Length: 110
Length: 121
Image 1 (cartoon, rainbow over the protein chains, first blue to last red):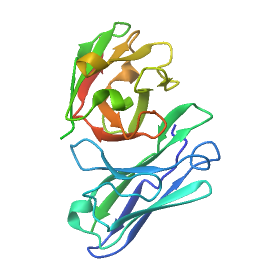
Image 2: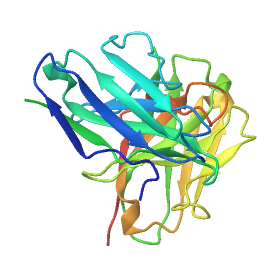
Image 3: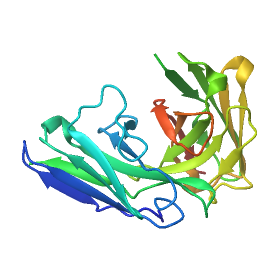
Image 4: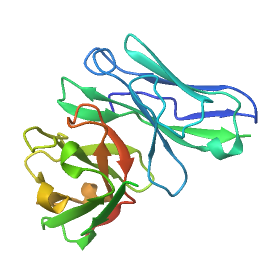
């Protein structure tokens, strides 16, 4: 049972904006930075956003992250078919003394 | 280019042991913390363990604490996971992942392709 809760699914048509939420607590999101990972079907996860809102080089600026109190969000603007994937938030948890992943959100492009 | 290649997975009976290895290249291995993350078939990601650059800081998920041991050999650019007392619920694809910094708190950035561990009689 993950301590970071995400909606199981999200969808949109090409060009639309999709937002994924990640709900945590004071021991994880509330006290540490949030990372987001994209996992395309059959592949290893890829870092999409780090430190709440920073994009690694090569990640399109269509992807953006934000954090407020004990929640975080990932926004995908200008949705494209290649964005169809599973998305996970993650953060260090001070109470568990370990790194925790969110439950994951499957994004479907209609 | 960062490369992480896992090995050592396979089919093992419950209660037995297995040792995973991860060969790293393309970066200065001893500058970064490392992690093991697993994914059961059709399920989400689960952090298993992490180790800081100098092995001074170790972390384990509660689900593996006391059974798994993470280690690294900076001279060999290698990461290891010794898994004892394996259970059916340990069945998963195990990923080796490099951290963004020297400390395990920041989290992974680059991932290997994984090695499959199946625990079954």
